[in-house]
Length: 111
Image (cartoon, rainbow, N blue to C red; front, top):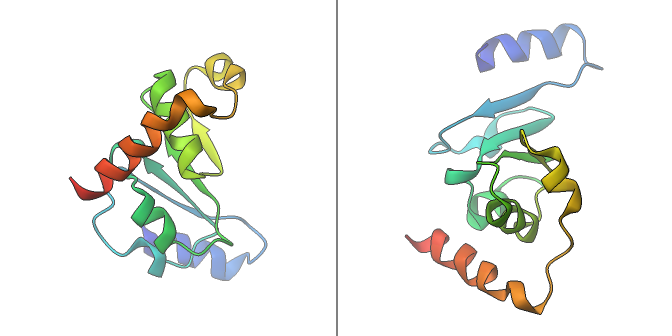
C-alpha cells in the first residue's frame, strides 16, 4: 500500500494508526505524516533516526543477529521486528564491553 492510500485511510479514520514500512530510506521520510516508521536495519543510521520527529516511534527490521539487535538498541529505536523474539528478549542493555557498537554506529553513518 502506498503513502497516498495511507493518507486516505488516516483522513477517513483519524484514530487509526498508520505507518510507513520501507526497505530503502533514501528520501526525506520525516516529511511523511504517519504515526510510526518500520525501517530496514541496513539503511537505518543515527543521522536518519535523528531526522525523524521523536513523537513518531521507529521500529527496525533486524537480520536476527544479536550484534545487530544490540546496535539498534544503542541507536535508541523504539522496537525491533525479528523472527528471534527470545534472543531480543534476553538482550541486556549495553555495558562497557559493547562500546565497539557505538563506534560501529558512528562508522555506518559516514560510510
